[in-house]
Every structure is written in structure tokens, then in C-alpha cells.
Amino acid sequence: MDSCSKSSSNAVRMLGICVAAAAILCSACASAPAEDDPMGIAKAFAVKYEAAVAAKDAPAISNLFTPEGVFQNVLGVFKGRSAIQGLREAGFKRGLVKEALFVTDAHRVGNVIIERGDNILYLASNGSTTEVKGRWAGVLLKSGNEWQLDAVTAIVVPAPPPKP
Image (cartoon, rainbow, N blue to C red):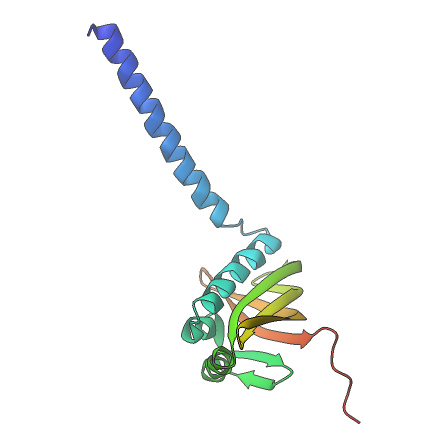
């Protein structure tokens, strides 16, 4: 092989390495939303939440909340990570297999993001899966480099009629 062919071969190899490195860097950038993109931050957080639900990992779900975080739904108000973990463990025992979150709105002021959206809970029972649709609103707080939920309120759609 002459020196020109070796140079060409090395150049092609280097180009391939550069393309691979660029692809890795771009995928890392795509998974980390810009700090000035509240929708991107909220959607990335929703993906982490969905993954923890799919893994049936109640401790991971509770650790997405601040230590004093609050989760409110038709079952009640759950304050603190321990209560939120208990809520999710009970949900898994009742058949919760998946939750899909759809962020429809997110606004940031300083280290706070106010977000809202729709969700679907997938509950398995007797060989079939039931979808329970709802709406939610949440508050994300940034502590250091990490975003955590401080409060979530979730309702079933349509909401059940008020009790007399």
C-alpha cells in the first residue's frame, strides 16, 4: 500500500470515529434539555417518572419528590416520601402496571416549574387492562443540579360527582 492510500485509509477511519463521537454527543444533548426550556425539562422528568412506574419501583418514585413533597389524588393527600412510596406500593398491589404522562404546559420562574398535563393509568386485573384517564398539575423545584417534584395534584377525568 502506498503512503497516499494509507493516508486515505487513516482519514476515512478518523472520519468514522468523528461521526461516531458526534452521534454520541448529540444523543447526550438530546436527552438533557436546555435549562431555559421548561417543557423539555418537564417532559424529561415525566420520562423518569414513567420508567420508575414501569419498573414498579416505589422507592424510586418517592425519591423523585422533595423530602416534604405532596401527592394529592382521589385517595387522599400523601405528604412526604414515605407516604408517597406507600401509595405507589399499594397501587402496584392493586394492578398498576404503567402510567403514561402527557405534559401539556410548563412555565419556569427561577428554580420553579409549574407544569400540567394528562395521564393514563393502566391497571391489570383478571387478564385484562383498564385505562383510567386523568389530569394532573405539578410543581418541580430545582435543588442544586436536580429537579424534584414538590407537589402533584391528580384527578380522574371525568371527575366523579361530588358527594352530597
